Image (cartoon, rainbow, N blue to C red; front, side):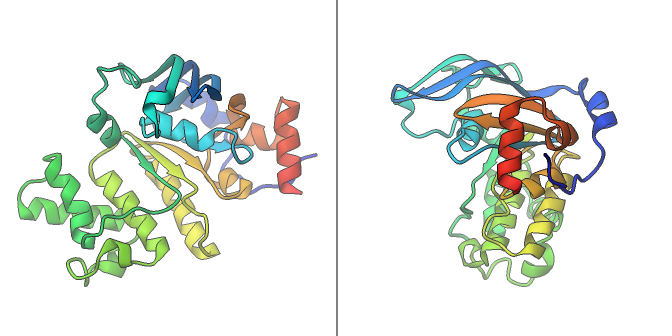
Length: 273
């Protein structure tokens, strides 16, 4: 029934250990309508620190919408209607009291299409550091810029052109790494990675997968990957969505080898065939 996928570790014991970890984001029977159309339906899910949660499902299942809802980056907000709750910490994300700049710094969304600023590589990262007063002196900024670029495996490629080359002029793969570096430099709690490995070669994809796993040391990571094999490689837990509904969530090992729901098994079989 199931095809062999490269699970990055055995998750049985990890799942037992992780259930006590605090949730960075919690959804309870959360539903979202856009222009009267249901796009998310009664989703109950915790985003936990110290793990990678992989989202799987067909195109239009609600994966990217869920990510954008977590940081309130949805278009046409006046046409939105929500029920249930979506909270970051003690803050209801869709309440008028939610401080959006703070939310979007602490819950960082990296879209499928990289969006570096049309500024130098240095300024792409230094801007957020200064704006949020994370680093103020030039020495502090320089140290933080280098740390973020090294973490994202980009330093050796750009260290000689930090002030000379714009982020938008980097190769697409490096633009993605720069966007991740820019996000982690301002110390987010949650990272939302939307198809970060799409449209790049195998070696670059493997490096990004390794980075996704490494980032969970300091963040809660939610990832939509280009393939099920990549999801199996990086995820601790996996959530399967279908038409805006959360069908099943469990450890990656359980989802890919012994999913309980027929819909989940059918999707994995059809996608892996």
